Image (tube, rainbow, N blue to C red):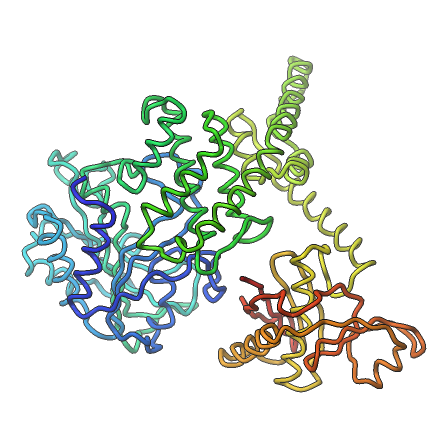
Length: 608
């Protein structure tokens, strides 16, 4: 290798720290709910409050190498360049330097540190439109650095404007993208960065955040910011003269392990190569999510569902190429203990936990996989037989779709994510009735709610170790709201799954950031105090006399169940609850929103 991944990481960070930047390190991959996305999908995303004007505790010049997760194009993984986890090398100016300094530093980094020929560097800048002017300032700065005017292209908003699509209140602005040719054979007289012939590769971009996005346009930011993003994997590939990201040292040991285990060389067989890439990519992303500072575990909802889908997809492809599943753990060890040991020390410290939980999920799915595959084949065979039997009959249109009911059975009984069934169906020339699946899923959820409503209070979807914990957290949450805003606060509804609680209460405005923090502190203080949760039975009248509150449908002389949590909460409730608040570990408010006039909703989670 001309440059290793660890050398590239160090070069980037050293370059900017030498120019007054502070390395702020990588933050959690898991979205905190503030930006409406499940995972951090861009290096700048965690810095949005500071890009909008909030002072950063480490100053106005920052840099890092930030991990990101994107799964919107998961079906593309398997080719040489798509990854679900990737890293962005970034640096930022928060109202400090702007275009002059940034263009000069990027140019110096590319030419002096990475050895790019300035005669071959090409750039694109914003062409301007009715909402923002042409970026001639950046173009002139590039020309003064020595980039040929013929190598600077003006492109529209679809190419040279950065903003988070559909997200109001975020910083945005024109960007300067940097390109370099793979070879010196133009496809024609107008071959340039805007050409789709593949000659030019984008190696990074500098976004000049001059505006804040509004519902109907833009407004200038008080402080102009710079947001630089260079793809780590892409740069590592390019600097080593590669066009396949799985040939860099990030993956080379993993690929070698699989080659030895199955007796196939990488690129020897197209189908096997694709499977190797999927297994490598999905295992890497899975350990990153599980070993994150806010690590998650596989589940059937939210981010946990994405994680489950990644692991189960890796297991499926491992079985396809006859890779013993024990090798998935060995692959995980390479990523954690060799490739990312220095860059992600928290993941390294959690490695035994990650291996255990990864193995649990592999075992759980592999047991059901063989039976599920048989069921899938039965469904496909049924469609084929029917088509053969009905072939040639007037008006008969051959079936090409797996029913939603059959897809839901694969999900509910065998743990097949709908996306996995869809992928398997596509390989057989079939599609899946997604609407029918969604309807079957909703019917199942409604039945579960109806059934559980007869036995439990508080909107529990089931009675696992996780929903019970969140039920108790609901009590502490309501107690905190009443402590902060008075006894007029009442529960207006709730829904609890094994992943999160949703709690509705009467209140006429959004809680401030400070109030959210105070509320979280109230609940977490009760958790840290390890308070016993005590259940007792008494008449409704007696409960009221003792100060209990809560939703109830009973007469004064009816005996009801009451739960007492020390001096924190005394509430009428049918249960169930944990034995001690310490079982809740840590409480975090993920989101708040309006439900209707005078009613607010809080969504919260528990973590380790």
